[in-house]
Image (cartoon, rainbow, N blue to C red; front, side):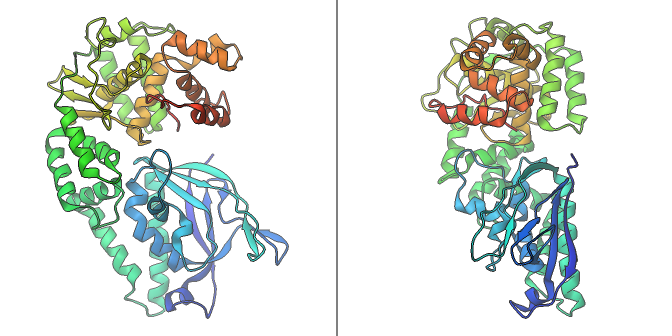
Length: 453
């Protein structure tokens, strides 16, 4: 399926309603994601289906321009989405009393997941959106489509003599900040924390910028979105305090073949979870694991720790906001695990091994969070495939996906049953509802073993 994304003006229309900008930019718009047309509507008045719908191009462009930083860089939160998050990620927030396409945008920093659900027929509304899809769009493709659309709307207004508009001013600011590396980093941190431009506490952003000089810039870009909530400053303080505690001293055994495989993986254009799976398979081959389960002793030896290290992991006094490995030099890591059950610590340790292989050399902190950023997706995919290869799972289950069989497979591979289900769903072996039902029934959390893409 094509991962293209486009916003096209089928025809400009005349209207006497709305502001001056609305009147000049009323249009038949067609929004498409690959083969799916988000603006496909069922029209009661004409008793027909159309691939385009009459909307205000100006209001849509204003929403994209005003939400640009958060659309591009703010990951979806775990659990319930706040009204503020929805305002910046759901096109229906464009306003103007218009029935907008029910599009939702979720970033993982590399790509944007664009999803759409059909709307319910309402007696007062003559049209109903009928498409249902979820498509992953590369970040560059999304940017190009939005840039082109906003540029077209600005040109339309200028052709009508409207040379000074709020849209032009707002968009010029966005473009200027995108070209300035320092401004870009500042805005990205704001957005990843869940703030609109100039609304984040300046001391918090300043602290993150200072930390980037020692922890690594890419690491900070992962840490910031994990500090969202009512008091992000307090959460960041908790992370700093946790980073100073004593964890497990590890000296990972990383053969040159695996270093080269990780380097090649970073350069590939594959999706994050595909990079994780591929690297995990290379790692299993390098370590001579074939399809057998990775024992806790195996994992400890690979990480250069004592055989019983994971069973005797130091426990944090209170649940930390994230797991962390601190690179103390080129070869030594201080592993700070937040998971309590052994299966959770095994999975988290495998994630940290993946991040050690894939992260930039400039990153001295390697964070594991519950967010669905590209980096976290690669970690989780690596851990799932490294600990329980999909081929080995399928061979063991032999088509029996009952709860008892999945529980037994999880015990065999030393992971949770949820990790087994997630891996099967992500490889298309099981439909998504198998996982949704399992997540709803979980009462103790997922232990970071929920690598859903």
